[in-house]
Amino acid sequence: MVTVCFRAAGSHPLGRIHYSVGIETKIHSPALPAGAPSPGSDPGALHHRITGWFTETARDLPWRDAGCSPWGVLVSEIMLQQTPVVRVLPVWQEWLTRWPTPAALAGEPAGEAVRSWGRLGYPRRALRLHAAALAIVREHGGGVPGNYTELLALPGVGSYTAAAVAAFAFGRRETVVDTNIRRVHARLISGVALPSPSLTASEMRLAAELLPHDDGTSVRWNAAVMELGALVCTARAPKCAVCPVRDSCAWLAAGEPPPSYTPKGQSWHGTDRQVRGAVMAVLRLADTPVPPEMFQQEPADLGFEEDGIGVPLSALHGLNSAPEQLERALAGLLTDGLAELHQGGYRLPA
DNA sequence: TAGCCGTGGCA
DNA sequence: TTGCCAAGGCT
Picture 1 (spheres, rainbow, N blue to C red):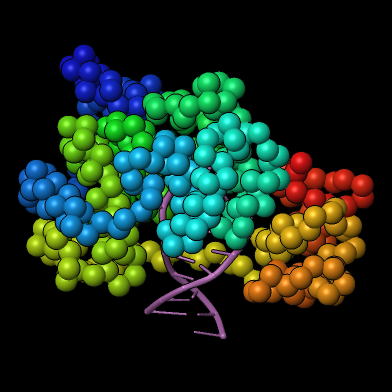
Picture 2: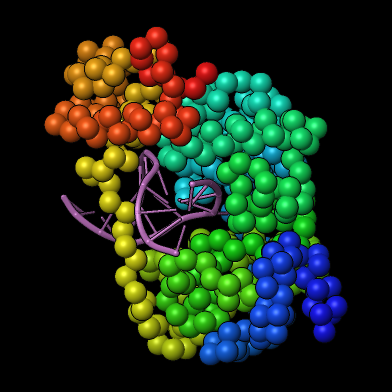
């Protein structure tokens, strides 16, 4: 029994994690949660219909091109974390032109990565991507590693990104689970409107169960389910009328029951995050260190040109009444390595 | 593990 | 207009 199950998980990095955590409970647990509905149709039919739909309607994205390097795929996956495709596209093109290899990025200061990150958001991702490039050069001879475990060890690469790069850049069979795939599984298989707030072990088991056994098919399946979640099975107003598996959907069959919980929104106005974002916008524009007192002056006095949108400078100016908030933001940026003190002013890391 | 971390489009 | 949401990761 143990031998059989270990062999089944052996080629599967996530399976190995489960094995090391607790083999008895994992091995003897059923493939599907006890109370969960069964898929309702055989997986082969789902595979055929969803991958067939993918072949016909998939977006033509540059990181899906056969000629795209593993580095290009890795950069895209980091940029796409919590960020829509349309905003990633132009920045990805610029990055791959400027830094076509990990060594090219590793040869420049981290601050250049942060600056060229632009307004993608979560700029610490730029910092981690730069650190990942350094690690790739130092520990992997300049080539993006191709297996899950080595990818997972890179800065900014978590379980999703490691599986995605191994699958999409190297053709490996991996259980890829992102927010799109989770939502498709929740509706199609489990019959609920939304997946649970955080990724659960049963979701991983379900995804592993649904994964086609053949390497190539599994890669297409991962991409196809993700695309289905992004284009059809969307969080708000899903387009069920054009869904290739609508007649197999447990959520539709159940009468589209509403979510069992209400997601808590992310606050923004008046938060430290807003101040951090405003400070970062100024630092990206500045070519000399910015003294702390400058952050609360009139935008025009900073000597920068408005960048056409004008949000960051005016937003920062409007925060005059919260000096302690600015202090927290600046201290946090220093701690995170997104800014450094130089000659009495703040600048991007050199 | 729950909280934190940017940004902008859209309903 | 306000709030939701987007190919998550880290502590």
